[in-house]
Image (tube, rainbow, N blue to C red; front, side, top):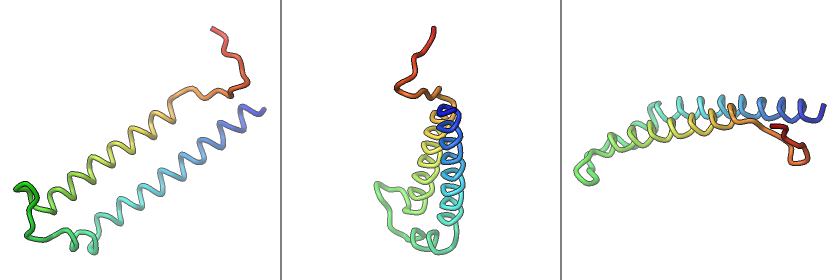
Length: 84
């Protein structure tokens, strides 16, 4: 029963985290943030807007990777014995 409860809590926390990061992604792609980074400044020859969008894209892929690793990995309690 304890194992079922911990899995359920973990999945609920993952679901809430998915929602939070989805909303954060939507906010980052709206006017205030895009306007902040839409400058003529270049870093290493790349426009600031390009770096902002590329970094946001890479960060979103990293977050999805972390969530999928947490969702698909077997979760066991430290007190439980794993049978081969």
